[in-house]
Length: 202
Length: 293
Image (cartoon, rainbow over all chains, first blue to last red; front, top):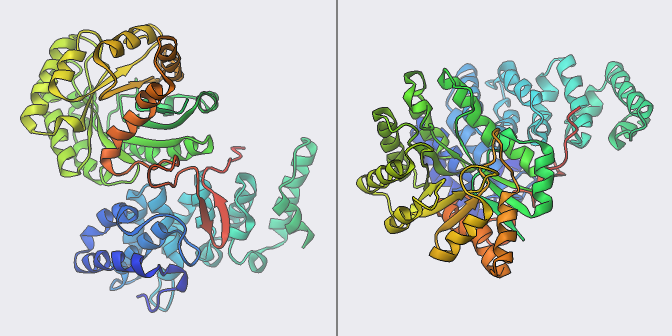
């Protein structure tokens, strides 16, 4: 179900060489996915990657895509839920990063991974909250959940630039909520987040 | 003074503790999975606890500039409850994860057959997942429990340098030293060890293969006991380098055998608390303070 790998999900040559045998193994035996995802950072690498995402995030996302590439939408969504549920925080972030690629094309997973995004938005882990508000959330989250996701970014200090398609999805209700946050902060004598001020000025 | 507390239960501690620990020089901790005071009744309760150790607690520590690692196991007390034995089936998944640096705490509580069976299986799991082991010694009948623990370790065949035997005292340290395992000491306000007795043991048996921890939890305990032991060592004539060896290099050497320590002291693969995580082209520091409003 995956046509092309987004450029953001590519790694450097050495890292791709270390990832390749893991991808082969997961395609041959999808039951090895959980183990290879857990070990991915130790095998492929860790730290900032060449095209935006971290190396370990990309490696784990690619393994998930490999496990899903011959599956239909519902079966892929089941693998996503299983992998998210069994992962630690880093592994869960990689699942979130893989969602736009899993959603691509006519055989994409559609709304089926929304519960995973909502779970991430219930945490207070900024790494998960930021990853949850990517292009998949912009496309599939219901309005109320998406607005609260944006507000949670402002509350927890996640830069609003992490919110995909913010201007396209922004509406009067979100603006009202952000204005209310700013009013509350000013009433308490606290700083209004710069991103809130900037959003309201646009 | 840079401090690595090799045994502390941070889920039971406050953010004030994290701040005080950082101020005293604590930059890394290992949090062993243990009993929660209230017995658990299902495997799901353990799964959420293990996920918390590897998820929220790790993130919480990073907010205070402290690298957090965990050891994962079914503890000896709950090994006696048949409802909890399914935990052994979920352990292999956790023992592959990045933040897990040992199998632990395993060992004896009341020295039952069930405890022994579960200990043996988890020693085998340590071998299968290439991890060191952290063994708790019982509070009651400690000498007999320590002796039996060391016999079992030898029977299973784990290399002694990959085994830490913890909560030792004057009566059990020689048994562990003779076996070639690492000796762990928990320094407490009024039980287990205190700072001055700790220094006396160090003077007698030297600084090799020894770890000092606060084992702070929800009981009466003090997360700065590592720091206070360092102060007592200096007062007793030890050098700064000796203190660094006991409170930093020794725990790094023991848990480093896992290949999974993530520290930003430059000596190991650096990630936690130091480097930038990149989200959609926007740099967000790991450990950035979170408003928990």
